[in-house]
Amino acid sequence: MDRLSLLQGIARISVFVSLLMAFFLFTVKTENKLANRLFAWFFIVSAIDLSGFFVFDFIQHYIDLFIFRWTICLLAMPLFYLYVLAVCYSDFKLKWKHLVHLLPIIIVNLVFLPRFYMASDSGLKLLSGDLDHMPEIYLIQILIEFQYVFYIVSAFLILKKYREIYLENYTNPSTSTYKYLFQMTTVFLIAHCLVALKNLLRYSDYKQIFLWLNVIVGTGALFITCWLVMKALNHPELFRGINSRLKLTKDILPEVEEKSQSSNIQDDVVLSKILALKEYMNQKEPFLDPSLTIQELANQIDIPVRDLSVLINHNMNQHFFDFVNEYRIQKAMRILKNPLKSDLTVLEILYEVGFNSKSSFNTSFKKYTNLTPTAYRNA
Image (cartoon, rainbow, N blue to C red):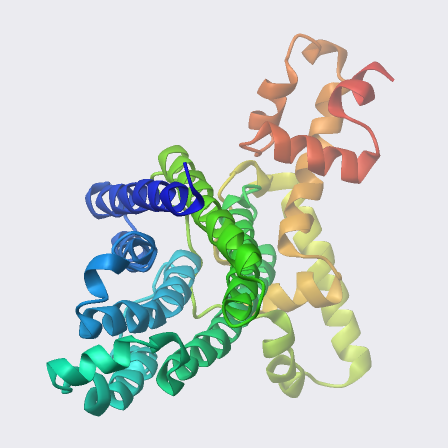
């Protein structure tokens, strides 16, 4: 089997799996339907792009279809960016302002309109002879690279802010959303670096390397798609988002400080609030709720959520995530050393103190004690 036949076979499988994934995302039952639909369209656009490996002989006779297949790639990264937003923020909705993401594909097609879409049949045949070296093709490739950098950086910034807000406002030890999206964004970045290298070699004398890179890129696309299919099958609910109106402590701190009085009075007030908070945590044990949020705790102790956020994240210099888990670990330590509860397994204990994942419990316990729960019990 020659390289072209191998590449075409891989591409056909990749397109089939991508369309299968899109169908799954359109039909699976989940609360976050918008995120699923955006990701489904991302896979459809990817399938159209990958189809170029085996439909070239057909579409080269229809230059307008060839150009359409090229330009539709400009929708891939905007769809992925909006998907990341929809997964991270539970209240995300598409608005008219998001149509700005269509500007690149609209502008590019307007540039191509006079020369390609409205050219005569004889003119198209002349253009097809050296299509790769047309200035418009160069323009698309350069625009795709700039667009990719913009959206991949934007996606990483969204994930960074998501993680910071999550740690300051939530205590559920599961960080699968962040890890999943971070892994996927990193994989896309690495894959696109190979694509960019392949496109550079297209115009060089290294044609053999270019052909092999095509095979590697096609194979990589297949593996990435299969990996995402497995992720989706294992997590069909597609995760829990955070509220986009939540602010980081560093953003609300200036507003709180403006309202504060003299430093001495402020220190006394802060100290009394910290003592009251610790007493409430020890007596009422709200941390036993595995889904406890900073909003829920603020409601329980009857103080504004922004004041509680500043108190924990700034004055106590802890993330809310770490603050609550510290109480869970302390209670777990007492249970592990209690002879009357020696019959309880580690799994039973972690659920009893408010964790809902063995791996996250072990990680937090070792971070706090430098020992595993079993080692601590036997020490």
